[in-house]
Image (cartoon, rainbow, N blue to C red):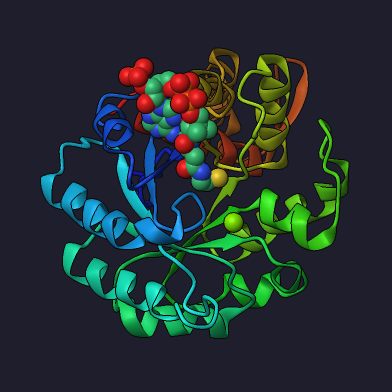
Length: 289
Ligand code: COA
Ligand code: MG
């Protein structure tokens, strides 16, 4: 019997401003795995209070089914004069209890601890979007209370003065490092957004790239991005069939004493058996089994 914790599909995480009531209503019917209500950069300063109230109300109303409901708060360090936004967000969410709280612009584990002091045992997801975070990924990912890393490519491009382009070349090292940090500390890894809503081919390529880097899924900004994203981050029928063949091959009596065997003309080791189990587990979770 497999006693490992069942993986949770996080293929598609759709952002929307918490002020957009229509989008929140729509999100309850969309096929995304995660809904992220934003209180931070997608909300104008004058609307911060209303956004917080709307997010708390949405958590209370529920209706999101299997989707995880995550709220992105303002930074605790928000500029002079408005420093209380992040803190008030956190205090409101401790009572509302969404599935997780996404914290922005953190540089390291110490910064995460400041949120944890306010959020208690609520799972924390951290944006990876500052130059300092890129340099301290291992420390950041080790922060107690953290469950996921979420790449913030827009802020990072701004900080680094990088021009990502369609292939995201300036980010390749950082994307790989983020996945490594997440895996090293047992966290989910979710890729950044693609701003080009109408660039269907570019978006598909970016999803495929994120999946190849090893991300569990991708953050999204528009409902039209959900279906292609879910496709890119789901195991293919061929991958599922291969996983079944590997599991069956190792279960056969002839393989009992073998660490390495031949399946479909290729070498397969016990590590591939583990990988096959992971593929089948995520496929079952996606199917809702
Ligand atoms: N979540 C849920 N529903 C959304 C949505 C989203 N992120 N973006 C658009 N929709 C809905 C619209 O409400 C509209 O619904 P309707 O057909 O029932 O009227 C439909 O999808 C089509 O929307 P569209 O007209 O194509 O979008 P737009 O041009 O009005 O808005 C954006 C474009 C980018 C402003 C909008 O998609 C958005 O706010 N995205 C999220 C931004 C965000 O949260 N950023 C923070 C993290 S980077
Ligand atoms: Mg950001």
